Image (tube, rainbow over all chains, first blue to last red):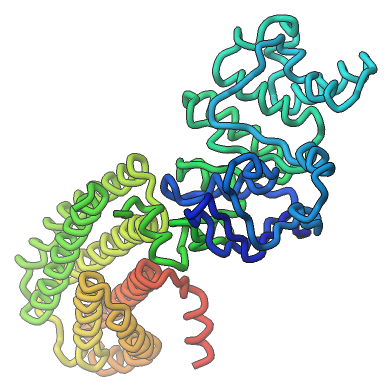
Length: 252
Length: 225
């Protein structure tokens, strides 16, 4: 399987705080990778490296190499960062639709990226909403406000919004933690379907979710990647005792 | 103690209680055979119901453990192993009961010479040792001890493989005790199956503790040997 993302000896500092310590990982294309670990272990910081979101934080320092499609994303000129972010979509913990219509939420990114053709935009919006398994539920109310949707629908709308600009990587930071079990199930089903087209990295605190949706799992602790392996291996028989303690709830 | 740990301990205690009952059944089977104690044989048959009840309770506990605690890694291996050992022990209980039926069905004592020549008594001793050693191996989480059953199982297989020839000897030597000879042969077949069940339990213990699947690898190794 082709490697989509590779990090080599990555260190991240927020001022004096050493948040990530020498992380090495190779993420294969079109797979789902779950990042797990206790709060503050660095998994979300690691996730935000891939679309250079950490750049926006004062005092941040990043060392090591982060390659996407063999390109060092921290060696590209600033003018290329927008293009990188088009390639790497992101979905956050809480659904955060824009105060616009359902249609405009998805069309927004397309317009920002210079697409003007109305027919093309409509086609892309429908495609993204279908990919997000939301089309059937919203096709008759595209002009309604996104805030009229339920929490689960809003989160799928945000996924559609991220997918509309056709990224190849989707980052998800606890995308279902604010949702009920039915909406969570829909998001997980969606993740499972989307991996045929996208490389997905998901941060989750839910062990069952990690084991259900991911192909690979990375366990972080105090800024270190303790173990990274196939999800089956991690949840059957992890190599490290710390991983075993964490996934079996004996972490203390 | 964490909730999951107390549930594991509870399930382990139940399994050990069942193990003890099965060992008792085997010991009684040996006593009943040695002394041709038909009352004891009937007692074994009556106790079989308790083993069946144990099996159902442990099955149910395992189901609850999986449904409610959603175990992974060593916890998952623990419960999968408990489920399988439960079945193996119940079958060993069945075998003890089956042997006891041969004893209770006979009005007269078994000819010691037939039992000795066919090594049914030695087989029973070996199989009881296997089940007892496995209980200890499980309690102590000692896979080296679990592995000791392989040697004994090969001994059982060896005796079983020559049992038909020895039965022919006995049929010729004791023509008026054909029924006894055939029953002893049937007992030997049953005891050999205790060895198989014990071997399965050993494999489960090794899987639980070392996360190694040795089932079919072991068969291949045995063939090579």
